[in-house]
Image 1 (spheres, one colour):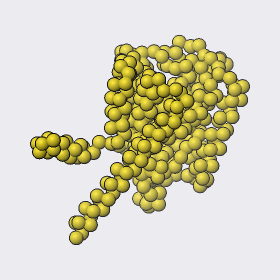
Image 2 (cartoon, one colour):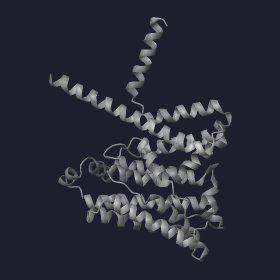
Image 3 (cartoon, one colour):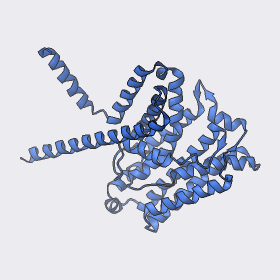
Image 4 (tube, one colour):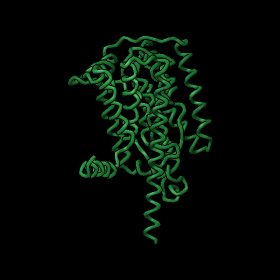
Length: 335
């Protein structure tokens, strides 16, 4: 390699560093290219559309959950609320409830669960692990009891259109997810509530002294987590034309993984919904790619787990390097 080539490579690397591209975005691009080279069907318009469609319910469950982790808490009830909402849509409609109410009531249930979680945690000072784990058990049990442990079918044109219909060639669920994700990004970045969430994650004591209503903010955060978990369940019911008490089993941990690999650490205070969007997309790109290259289902979870851990380690290392550089700059300025 001559000097000009070396200089060009160094300049390119320096340029990439200045761009400060998140590791999760690079991970998405790398996986997309690798799977595209491994199997040409991966890049087909149909498969790309299905990746985005399959991302919708995971991202929906993760949107509100991101806010919970941003304030340094956890919501273990997300998966159970997903299951309960999916089951509720079907059971309510089959019992004669008008379809609009059958779709709306599960969302109200999700909000109620979130409000109860928030009150017990922020107002009564109960441990968030205990409270949300308890709610997880309650609603997992209710979903099973309501359906006798069976998957229940629903037949309704509106429900089917929401889950499988298209507008301008794009699935309705994708439109819904894009609009709500954009709204949540705006709320996080442009509103006082978004600022309060980050402040609360940085330090609850400092946030309280600054005049932020810690209890109110926490309750709203958990209410949004419950709402979006329920919305994920409603969309699943619409997409599958059924409700299953087991449909949300993996959602708590999958949503958590999407959030963390998207750059929002469990300690809270930094990260956000933009990273969660990329994290959810990466998980579905990975799932689609592994299936198309013929990886057995038994190995897919192990490989997915490995990739998630690797990406988390990369982000932790990058954050550590940034902190060291920042400390060096402060030291040099002082010196």
